[in-house]
Amino acid sequence: MRTENIGKKVALSGILISLAMIFSYIESLLPLSISIPGVKLGVANIVIVIAMYTVGNKIAFTVNVMRVIAVGLLFSGAFGILYSMSGCVLSFVIMAILKRSDKFSIVGVSMAGGVLHNIGQLLMAAFLVSSTAVFAYLPVLLLSGIATGLAIGFLSREVVRRGKFDFK
Image 1 (spheres, rainbow, N blue to C red):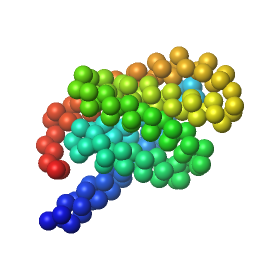
Image 2: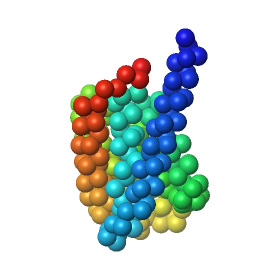
Image 3: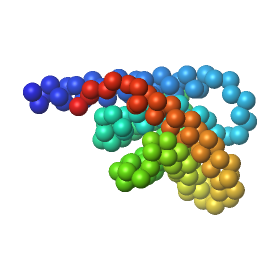
């Protein structure tokens, strides 16, 4: 029985990683007219937020990290992985803490994740270029993190609310 549960978790994780990678790829194809570097929708985060609320933080974190590595290797290279991973880890830790507190809705958790993802990437950029000048970009990235986090949160909330999840 225990082996069966492990097999189900591995299979589910593989499906979620694949789905998040597909969302990342589709997002890279969208001809968005946002001419601000670093601003993107973060559609793959729908998978992460939904996973947090349906299968738990452990699998959601694994899916998030594996997606960042796989997408980075396929599309953006080592620096892309560094930037994405710094945002991924920081935002996930904060989202998990906020979710666990039960004081924030799924939308609030997602919004915090969007903002913290951008802050994590700015911290990595400041470290790599040895300059805090990159924080001049913070207001723009905060606004985009709030907007995209809200959108991802609303979509995730509706999927969780309407879905019939029986993964445990």
